Image 1 (cartoon, rainbow, N blue to C red):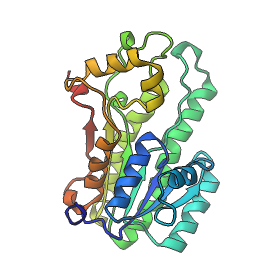
Image 2: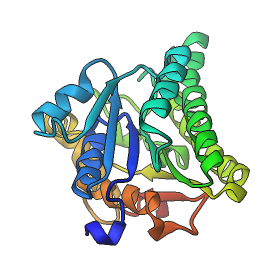
Image 3: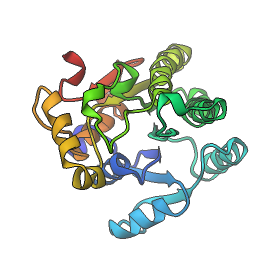
Image 4: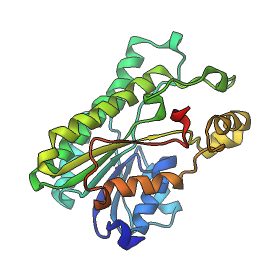
Length: 259
């Protein structure tokens, strides 16, 4: 597997690396002997790395991507210290979890800022460095809800239907991916994104078994996704195995959006 993906000693930065899907991705990339920088809010990256016994093997950093000036300074510092990464993965997002009728103007603006503006500026800053070296792979994260709308009958109380600003932002990430792929194509920098389907985290699975069962029933495969099932897709898009794939939205949803 290590030789198959060819990521050994490749520097890969994972924003949102301490989340449910991010942890699996970071662990897998480490297993592929990549040099991984795991970035997340507060001490989440450090806590994850300690709990996963990856101290000294995976680098960590604390960052709130919504703070654009701090984010720019952070990336400048990493570029100076680590050099231009081989790969960038960004799983970060911002959402309110509010109903459509409850959204305020500020809610929408804040979500767009954290989900679209921050994602674009991170990709632009790192991608521009990659373009200078004429190599690099960027993997952004969208969602099946950037493609289709949530089915109301799945989200019975106490669950709240996936919020509209989240889907709007994720749809924007898909178009952002296409734009950046074309923009840097002649510089040998690839940009792709992944749209996960039903991957509820363990807390949701435990506390809301009926909701989880409804998600599973909606999938043609008859089950929800497991975190480790995302890792291979990320590694593929980062690696030279996908050297002629750019501007693509890889849907990992068990067939959900085919229905």
